[in-house]
Image: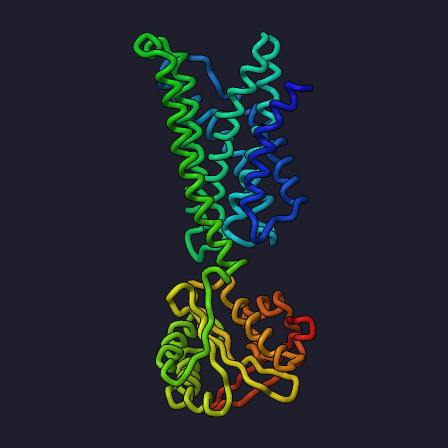
Length: 403
């Protein structure tokens, strides 16, 4: 029983570490458990494939093939399949850090069963405890680093506009490369020509060095995606708001010119975009809106202006969110939610009970608004001149529980 616990402990400890690092938008425990179990299951096809491919030639070439192709590619390949076809398509995979989280869970499922098998096999010759302690600090954490490398690029791929396949393949290749290097330094001792020239200590040092490099890269990758997670789900630490005044009109106009082509390019014609920008975002138009009571807010990420909003009272108790725009580079990072939350809180303090907005009926942002509490309350078609119509949904968010 004690030996079994030693074999299981490192994989579980690493799972808990990764779970702790995913602090801002944690994944459902059920999904994590399934990913772990899928990793366990993948040991079976990996073992069968390896057994059918591996030869016992002791040449350097044969050992390199064994390390990189027959072991590393097979093992990382089956883990990649579990990640790609279970976690990656899931709606719960909703931020880049999730790629690392799910990939490590799969890797730890694989590594845990593999560890149990190695430890109990070694116990037959009285070396169970030695192998358990050695693998606790090397083999199992190494599998975790391979998982981080694969998952980092899976997370980037999930939210990339282009090059998704290339990013996924990059993650797989890096995992195979570092896994292969680690195994190669351990396996090469089997080659008589190598063992005659160098000692085991030097080769083991090579394996440890490759592991340390992978470990260092893993911590860097976790830090990058975790920072993005923090910016998305806990933006208060990096973001700020301030009220905009007339001297900020050029900044608001500049943001609109950067945002609108991306926001509406697939919804309305370029001619209509140009017409509406000129109608609503000329310096004179923005000045008139401010004079009529519209309050503009600017959102900053650090010192950079990244978005803006406009709000005003439509009727007693009802506030109208006239505008809400963030730079394309900020989308998916919580900036829009940050603006809406601040506006909703301020409106509620003034006695508002409803926050209302109009959104084009073909705008993908409808899903975002629904996610943060807005519901469709009606439809509205508004003539804006020059033969153009705004075909909108009217959406509303209750402010009664906003504090």
